[in-house]
Amino acid sequence: MPLSALILAVMAIPLSFVNTRARRSYGLLVALLLYFVYNNLLSLSQAWVAQGKLNPWAGGVSSHLLMLFAVAALFYLRTRQHAPRWRQS
Image (cartoon, rainbow, N blue to C red; front, top):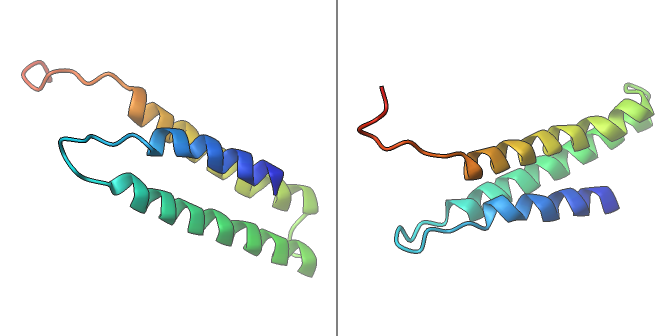
């Protein structure tokens, strides 16, 4: 649980960006969706480990690594440089 709290806290950084002129809060919807997916992945891996279908080490690490990849992707999407539309080819 401490690791998932840390991952969710770091995930909040790129999701908290809001363009005040656009008045769109898609970040909140994405945050809720990612939380539900993460929570279900943790529950599913815990159940599979309890049933013996999954290795305990792989079950404990796989969902966290998947969310760390999502965090890295969100940071990349927020920090990438956008070229002007007239320069894109």
